[in-house]
Image 1 (cartoon, helix red, strand yellow):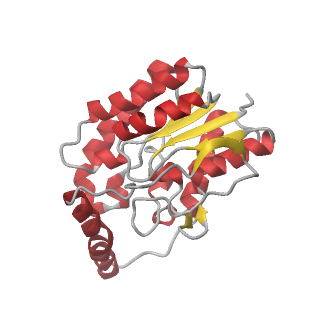
Image 2: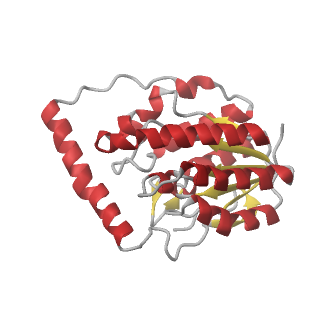
Length: 260
């Protein structure tokens, strides 16, 4: 199937954080998927309404209506991780927000694609206690997607999605290689030409890390990333405060690079 109007909504992963920088702009998996779509259909247009730090309810409240106004024939929805790591996480409430977005977009005729989340316990062992939340949220995403004919890129079962080389040092955002893999996975799920399941293959073996270095890495991560993140939450601040969508209008893929 050929898609001509692709709109991405969500949080920092869809915005493309860590695939680029604040000076040159961020690319990200959604931009990369748009490029794959354009390789098959040069007339495709693309908008990205995603903003970092947003909760699922905020994505629905702030991005869904503008997305519907663009009348996409393809939409991606990725949200929920910012909810999952907060106290008082309610999987049913989060999946309810996602399902409302699925229903609205598919009800208007769009094909929707979404993702499950990888095993957080393998990516960041310090927060392994959050793994049951990931399992519950993923189950809710699969069920909601099934009810609305949404395509799911099921990341959780594949070990490669937990490979440290796919993640930036903060272990929250994908590195460029991770964004490339996500785009390849979405292309395969959508059945784009020349796509296949090779994204599920493990990366070449990496050099083993000793116990002392592993412990040091965990301590560095807690001090450099987890601690500051917790402090922002306690102060009621978000990385998305004051941010706007990097690409709010449908434009030819080749015309506009992401703005800082």
